[in-house]
Picture 1 (cartoon, chains in turn brown, yellow):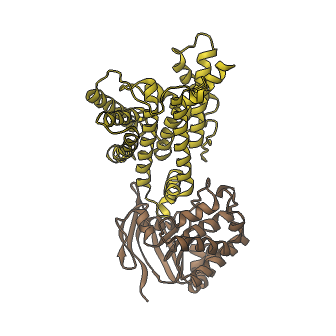
Picture 2 (cartoon, rainbow over the protein chains, first blue to last red):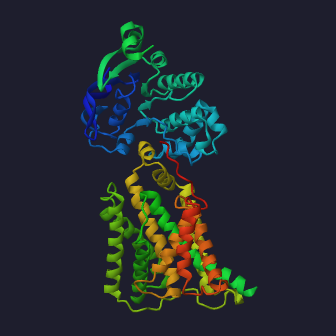
Picture 3 (cartoon, chains in turn green, cyan):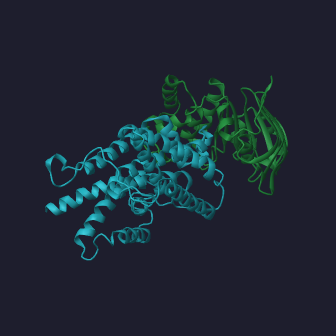
Length: 237
Length: 292
């Protein structure tokens, strides 16, 4: 199997501060991979570097094409959907407008309408609230909306930044179940960054552990989950 | 009573122009977080272009539409050449940019068409509207054209994909980029549209204030007052603010002793200060709360 996303020696900088110190990893097509690590380890920066939202060096290839030098919107147009930390909800717009924005780069108008209906099947609560301002949704509903908005791109690869953040455990389970379904049924490759390691490892098939801007551990999610040392030193449970 | 109705209607007519200017200012403010001090001068320049076209024999409405197209392109050009490079510059650098633009546009207009006052035609005539002494046909035309344009803009922003993308880019640039919106071009498009809206305002008010390089000075102050009153974060508020300022200006000039025509402009400035002190977000704007 060839790697869909190949990241080599990635270094990222915020002004003078270096946040990533030569990160390398690969995602297989169709995989569901999780990137774990403590606060400040560089998880968010890694996702932002893939979309060229921070200054970085190194090589990132998506389906064989280099991403460096491309603007964020052009990276997105290649089929990479990014659900940012804090969800990036357009709070003053309606739920349906948020979904339409997810498909703003697409030209196949007929399918967009069908896709919006499909999102309402995945997330029935969004259908109930489709004319409501997105800012009036609860945190969990907004996270569902953010995932649905990302899927409206018909992405080949979806990046999720801490989707469990601030959500009730029950909601997180529901959300992760849907992510698994999307990965299997819609063949979307997923990279999810998480602090909630236990749950992420249940969901994922591959895992990387990151510490202070470097990958310190990689393997199948099962291996990582069963390795006591890794759990204690890096994942804290 | 007839005086009151007359003054209110006349206020709505000039208010339509203030609404256009306020809307143009708010559109650019939403896109780049700066007030375009040169908005009035750009509108004045557009008006001169339409006048020049008519001098060359182009009929009124053709000149009108042609001027909108030229102004639209000109607005985009100004953004690309001057304000895109300043996007990450400090506030004062941008202010300097706006003042430079103001001075340059004003002088170029003066140099090209000189500073003498010119008559500007109206396609509506200035007879009493529908036989009523309350309002002239030109005033009715000002209101009508403005309302048509506002409805068009509303439909554009509400029901087209590009309108949706522009709203997204103004509301949350980073999120907009993450769904693939080219926010940089959305800003340029906003400049183009603001410039064209200003052109409409200039062309409609020119028969009233006459055509000369400083014609929009006062109008822009009222436009700012309208934008502040309605709320700089609300295009709808800016439009309503425009009509309110127009009516308020006229009533104050008529009924408050000693105000008259001479003190109308200070009233607009007093209004700006009053709103900023008591309701900084304006009537329809959202207060921006930053968590720390």
